[in-house]
Length: 319
Image (spheres, rainbow, N blue to C red):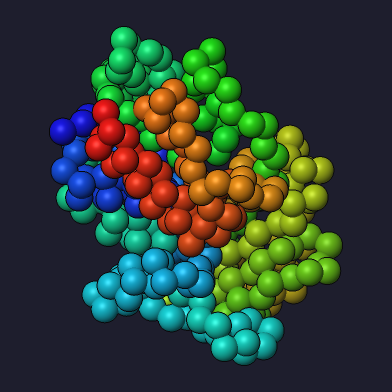
């Protein structure tokens, strides 16, 4: 039995961890967030509303992912939201029944997942690895030895963790700024509750969390265009928040604003996709995965995590 550490509790990391654990190995997942999920993130807002502020929905295009999603549908973890936004294209869009963070929580069941762990290095320890992290206000520092480490953060973050050990390709990501607004009435977002923009000067996405089934109380999620996020990334929070609220006004309608939350996603979307679904280094003892490998979608991250697990299990058979 191998000792495996997975860094990152998003879709890729949790998928890899579940499959590696099912293969009979000892797996620990480390994540810097307070809750697992990465961009599968849901926030509770003042007044009792909740809103997804990272990934909004997902699609299914492969048999491998379809088999897993069928289980989630059967147990009520996810549901079909719609089959298109501006028009019905016949292709289902799925949403987590109680928010994307709950899908991540469902995937954590039975796993050793440790939150609020800010891993800062992965270093060689003979034929093993030492994964270490410093103390933070949320918890003590520590270290774990592992035979294999699976790294699923965005490539620049993974590269920093293994600097001086192995080299990774440079990869660009588009940023995004999300704005969550709790309201006292439903927003002016037409059925089925989502709008994907190609030509709006500010927004790429607006979603009604009540229509999606995530919140019992009115709350809207808005995502900026990548170029807007780049141009305004370093602006003062209060100034940026007020400007974004003005840009959101046509969709907020006459509703009163109850609460506002803004979040910057530096690595929201990888630009392009690596030709491999995962990358093995150091004789297969370091494996890199994530949506930069599988494609910039929930399904892509799943496929990358699945490939990473296969690489780990193969390394275990040949070691």
